[in-house]
Amino acid sequence: MTQTPVEDSETSGVSRRGFLASAGVVSSYVAAGVAGFAGGALTVNAAQASTPEKEAQLRAQQQSATIPFYGEYQAGIMTPLQAYGTYAAFTLKPGITVDQARSMMQLLTDDAARLAKGKPTLPDGEPYLATEPARLTSTFGFGPGFFSKLGLQGAMPSGFGELRAFSIDQLQPEFSGGDLVIHVGADNPLTVAHAARQLSRTAHTFAEPLWSQTGFNRPQYGVPSDQTGRNLFGQVDGTINPRTTQEFDAQVWATSGPQWFRDGTCLVVRRIQMDFEGWDKLDDTKKETAMGRNLHNGAPLTGTKEFDAPDLAAKHDNGMPVIASFAHVRRAKTDNPAEKFLRRPLNYEDGLLPSGQPNAGLIFAAYMANVQKQFVPVQQRLADLDLMNTWTTPIGSAVFALPSGCQPGGYIGEGLLG
Image (spheres, rainbow, N blue to C red):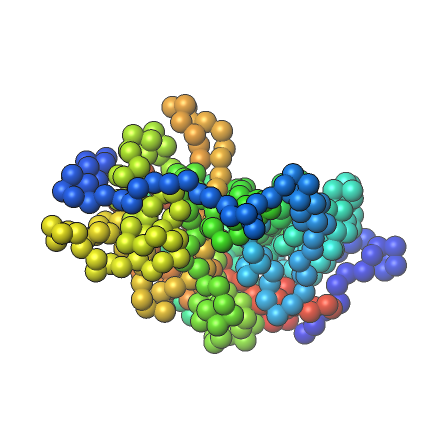
């Protein structure tokens, strides 16, 4: 049943809120004759070169740019990656009913639609912070507890449920689980902070905050558009992603299952803590061997450009594989279309640990139609033998089912909540 978004309190007469250690392995492998390509500087050709004036103009345009909220799919999934983002998870308050969950999603939809256009929510104590949308998107999803607490278990998509812990996981409850997730992305950190605050305030009427994770990527202006961003280990991160409509249809969007989930997707959020002290002890060749890619441009060790396909059969003259059996590229790569998905990672940096090392790493976000068939097999291979596990530790994990988009007059999740 399609619901009309809540009207402004001035016109409706209703209060809106009232409606409410393996480095030695690398060394021995390199010593046996395996080495990466020689490093080189990333260059920008003349056509891509940017002047301060052009960059200033691009920044101004980007701060006023908008991404439509309404549509067949939720924004923030196929949207080109923004520079900043926040994931916030909540648990439903005891006794919340389907009717109340519907009210929550109607209000959140109304908030998000306004913010996407550069307009404040109702109410908004700092309305001027809403005037620079900067490609703002707000995306919503439901965790397994959302379905069980509302008696909607029968509506859960195939392959969706609590994600089991893997052998490499050291999961912390402050970064794991959740009944509701809100993802906010934009090219302005102030925009992200303001939108996240407004949406969280609405959600808090119905749900308790569980965790919040904020991260960043390289801004898109003034840089080569054909190179993927880097993580805090200096590696190009997110090379293998769907890029065409056909690939998104095959890997990301649900085409079967419950009707409410059609054109929706699933989200896996994994918080990956990085060991910078250990990583910094490696030279570039050892780092490249562990990853299976060149640091200077992200090309596989068997190629020259980032998007070259890795040749896993290639061998050195001594018979050893160019891309090692433990290299991340080999462990993650698959020719099975049923095991491919979209990655939208964010880097995080939360000060220093007591050891003096950075409390930093990666917020790994992956989108797919079926978690068990697409994500789990790849993650299991990584847990079994990926040498990058030496310097990375998953400390948070959560999974959510994301409904399709909605049209004006509707709300996110209306097919599920009625």
